Length: 400
Image (cartoon, rainbow, N blue to C red):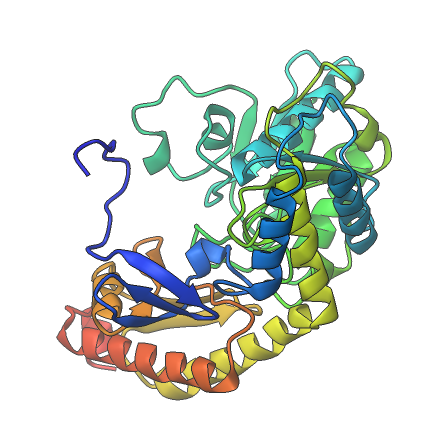
């Protein structure tokens, strides 16, 4: 590892093989995956349909550039627009790039209205990526440290507070869009109140703003709907996708509808690798698998089963602040920092994540069996109970 930049605090394990929801390391030890490569491998590891698509497409054509028509890209665009109700798609390589495209569309929208300094409303616990624009749009100050000065053009308001957005609308005339994660992943599996997204949609409509939905983690079926905003029956003007879209193949997408779909024109945006034949062939296979195996619905059913299991196991446990989620996007919030649970889980053959210091974040693949989901609930609950029995809980919790 001496030749690698120290960008990651890597765990002491080397994975060499996967199958479904299971992984094996270089010692032959087996793990049950409750993280899916951070919401990526929704179809599990070594999915046969994905493997076939990669092998067949690699034997035909991997890359040709966007100077030419790419049938696989057009087919994927058709599928995503059909499922989302959007009009047009732009394909790139990652979620951050997809969000960059959203931001650029919002600025083009502002300039088309004669606004010299177009500004986007974002929220304080958001995470939108690690490029210079997307960290500026992110509320988490930790990821901004050392990278100032920040790109201008973002106004931060509290998450889940539509009145704060209305207040900005009353005070400023340079706002052009609201950028929101329908469910915040990195921020701690934060689910807004019912009606919040509808309120944002109304505010945007009243002010001729664009509503930008970051569905990078919550999209592609993870919440039991194709896209998390569909739980509130609203439609954004622009939407970003990545992660589960490629099941491990790097791909991102920016979808737009109405006038927003026509703002990007030749020369205003582009990518070398984005939307190449192999990435789009794989993503098209992901869509087919999700749709024809009814895995979006399965994610909703499994998520409910797992949350009920956690509630049954942990509802009387001191130190548990909240158990929340939608579909296969689950957060268990503790009253104390719990980052060490990541290592403890690894030692017990489970892959999970802790985010926002105190939230155990679970993003399992949709192809878990009932038995595997129940096993995860039991083992993770036992780990949390054991951890909390030795943690320094607040006095109110200890006496509860």
